[in-house]
Length: 298
Image 1: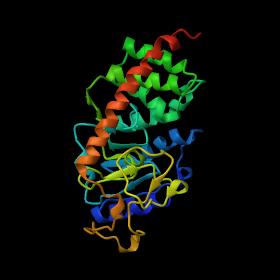
Image 2 (image 1 turned 180 degrees about the vertical axis):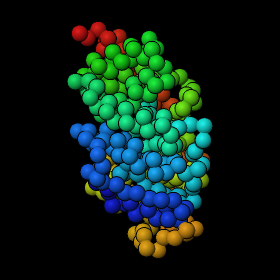
Image 3 (image 1 turned 60 degrees about the horizontal axis):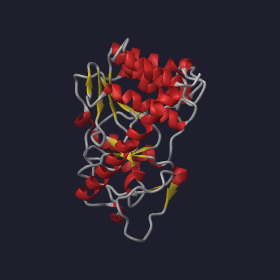
């Protein structure tokens, strides 16, 4: 799990400001032998978790923009694991979750890490795809609708098939968010969202972390006024006005300097994201039309 430059500085400084422990880990230091690095990381989390009461796992392209927010804002002791809906599609996010130290959580993560042995031969989306059938089997064991979605998963041949499969699973989940030991937070209510959805614009009243901070995709923010509309998903702008000096980060220091170009009105952002959510819902309805075609495959 090689870090990106902006990820560790922003997250480590945030952790210091809020008096959280911060670990940037190398998976080779753990007895995790999964071939797929995306499954291996969940094994690593299962090894670290016993040392904490609760852990927030984020993958290497998340960054903190609002250090005043607390992780506790998104925690509920009722649940062992908390996931959230990705915004730009109908997937459950596999690259970040809040997990409580419990036998259930450790078993869940260990079993999920080993799910790489059960992947379809066709298009599977690694852990992003697998998390859906894995969650469905945990939440609805023996469910016939889940079995139909499973058949679609194992017949998936391309990204459209995979999207239809995840839509099938989300149809089984319905509009619920609470599933016994597991919670899946609704779109826009989680602790992170993709940066490109609003052209890098954000607001401290609604945003905590942003996702998609890959160093090689960092671009200079343009001089013209930006609008909260989607841009290319393979680029992002740095919302910070200067570098983060971790040595100057201490408990209670949550005053960061930001690029004024990327600070936007909360209502405009909310409206833009709501419009995008409506678009995603329509796309999901359309892609589900592929289900009969996939099921006919031999």
